[in-house]
Amino acid sequence: MEYQHTPVMLNEIIKYLDPKPGENFIDCTLGGGGYTMAIAKRILPTGKILAIDLDEAAIKNTQFQISNSQFLNIILAHDNFKNIQKIVEKYFSPAGGFDGIVFDLGLSRAQLKDRTRGFSFGLADAPLGMNFGGQAGESAENIVNSRSADDLAGIFREYGEEKFAYKIAIAIVKQRQIKKIQTAGELVKIIMDAVPRKLQPARIHPATKVFQALRIAVNRELENLRSALPQALALLKPGGRLAVISYHSLEDRIVKQYFKQESRDCLCPPAIPICQCGHLAQLKIINKGILRPTEEEALNNPSSRSAKLRLAVKIHPVK
Image (cartoon, helix red, strand yellow):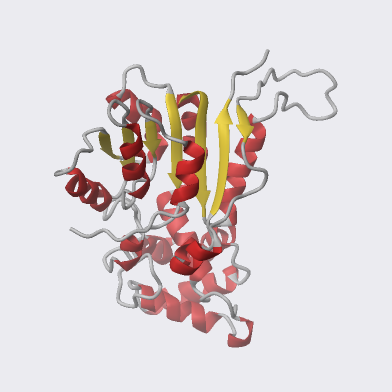
């Protein structure tokens, strides 16, 4: 069984999470199992790692990897990380006290190459699925063939930051009146025809932002991240470390704002001289700004180039 994926910034993740024997961790985005395996090795013999993924292929791949190995300390959960609290309650008692939690919010190479998924605009005959969980749930095909032009433009603008959002949306609505849009190639052609060639971006494929937007909308990625971060913080013990790797500004902005919010004592507006909210800081930001892959890693793994790593440690609230 093959599930191709190179873990991004693995050295940095291991350095900052610093897993030790007997500690417990959560990998919220199992993928190819790179982080999970590296952490599992370092927390033997009594430490455990809970690895979560909505993609059944990722779960089966890691099950295969560990079936004949010494890693009996890996717990696999086929689920969405937005349910992290409930997942932990199922496998751990008491449900908390973790030493580190990691999120890698990117797509795996295996998912991009899977023709049945439709994540890549480079696979012309791929169906427009884009669902992390496989066939279940809403699909990108359903969105492009059923939403109004205004709704589509809103998705492309909000989730893809696409400046030609409305122009592309109108072109999609016109085309689907002639024929239902079913493949990645059909959608790419509509996008390419809608945007004047001289205005198409030179550094990225013109379909990149629309495909990103549809994938985010299908999987409710931003909502799930907003839901998961507070749960992850609650599950960490004081001194526990939280690491999040994002790949575009929308995800990174959510992580940045959450880390900033939880590293402050008072969230009241400046106009209120005495704190009324009672909020106490629970995080200390480890790295100022973001960490990026080394030049060597970016060269060896081009998909890592846009990766942004943010790190924080849970602290005792000071009253």
